Amino acid sequence: MSDKSHRGTIFSCEAQILEHQGFDGDQYILRVQAPEIAAKAEAGSFVHIQCDRALPMRRPISIMRVDAHKGWVEFLYKVFGEGTRLLSLRKPGEVLSVMGPIGKPFSVTSACKRPLLIGGGVGIPPMVFLADRLRGQQGVAPFVIMGSEVPFPFKARPSKIMVPGMPADVIAAMPLMEDWGIASRLASRQGYAGCFDGFVTDLARAWLDSLDEAARKEVAIFSCGPHPMLEAVAKVARDYGLPCQVSLEEFMACAVGGCAGCVVRVNTEQGAAMKRVCVDGPVFDAYQVFA
Image (cartoon, rainbow, N blue to C red; front, top):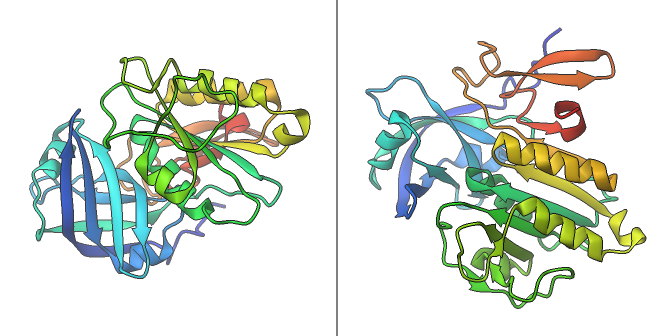
């Protein structure tokens, strides 16, 4: 029997654009007024946006931040194809047709005192959302690693938060994380000042190697990004014996489980199964996806 738990939890609304900022690398941060979505969204949720009325097929975009009190939802996306190109032309005051929140979110257990959040490229937004959910929780100390091969959509700031295992010259952090009091570091192979010159997984290993056995048992990994990066993250988790959840990125048509156009192979206790990224995910146990 198919899972219908998502029914009644996805809203369709006409969302007014509040802000729409462009950044280097064809990246944009979009904020819309969507109170019902803001009230129900969780870290890992996404929406299905009609980018332009001339283009009926919607596009899935991860949620980066919400303010349930003010009713806004914020996204980071990169222009990749005609849909997001048309979306990038939309102006504040215009209205977008938006469906959401959609998908199974990340789940953080009480045993996880040191969440390791790893985001790459347009996989950064769910990590920002998860960090927002974790900040201020008693006894929880997240560490966020972000990687990008195009300029980050923010001006990096030298971190004032010490992080064990980091090379002395790796000091670049996301300003928002600094404001929240959450440790973060940036990685890129493009030579950006203060960034780690290498892969996010190399930086993750350096941090994990600095922890003693007791501290390492408090770590769980949460990640979103390109498929090769997630596969590498899953290997890190396996090498250190850590729980790991990954949010998959996949093309999808309906986004509500009807078309089965976004299925992926997942290993379960009952054997291999085909799961829909839209409603069975996008968050999966990394060990089930990457055998």
